Image (tube, rainbow, N blue to C red; front, side):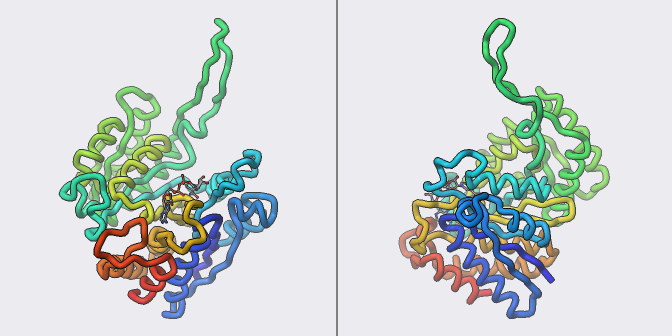
Length: 355
Ligand code: NAD
């Protein structure tokens, strides 16, 4: 039984998750054993239980094999004190589930090649997987703060560190993913300047010896940022730390030009995962049935691949998405002249139909 926690969240979250649920229900009626249970998170959690991550939701997530999340955030919550803000729910659930491996594919569909800001020949056929370490690095390092120096000047400071076990476990995830793809892994660091990066490179190289089939390369992050816009197709899997991954994964996602198409996964050591679209709750278009549900539907495909090891189901979903694009169906965000504009609901129905 696949036990899946469904957390729609706020804004367009409820609309897009409803489409992904339709897809899962269709798979279930074809015999897949799926159990869905709903919970509140973000502003919806605050409204329901006075907490962006209510205890019931936390428990549900802990007891599930995987979590499907829509998005959190909304104007009405912007003035709440920080611990009550929607994004705290997201940070807390990621931390509580110990999700250290963040997977962000950047994939350009042939039908959407013109949505990229790069020339079609640079991005057509692009298929990169960025693996970002998510629970360590300078974002969590202590000490940090703002202090006053002896000369009276104030100074802000943070601490970057990575322990060997943190690097090892994410490196293993990277090599295992590369094994299922083109078997090329590029580890990105700043080893020419940072000791943390020198150590990162040493450990990744060591782990790489266990995966002799995977071609390992190393690249400095400044060069990687350039290469991503110069010749992005040179990459297969990019493995990197939290802060570099934060920046590079956003850069790579823009190569595809369509934020409504991008799924993501965050995994723990046992492949339990939280799956969500890369975009936010889009309060500007919430409730209008115009949001693109494909990123969320593609997040279910990632869930089937990474948590449940059901590659054939993952491909079935991805093929269905490709087919609706080939049929010319487009939500507003990816609309081009000559195509057929559809709403969120109709897009979900079309994917179910072409499953
Ligand atoms: P956003 O991603 O919500 O929206 C950016 C733009 O893209 C908007 O114009 C929006 O209409 C459009 N867009 C996003 N997803 C779309 C979709 N599926 N279909 C069609 N158009 C789509 O980012 P934002 O506007 O900066 O943030 C809005 C809220 O979302 C804020 O409260 C923010 O904190 C939150 N947020 C949440 C997450 C998350 O839940 N993971 C991520 C980013 C932002």
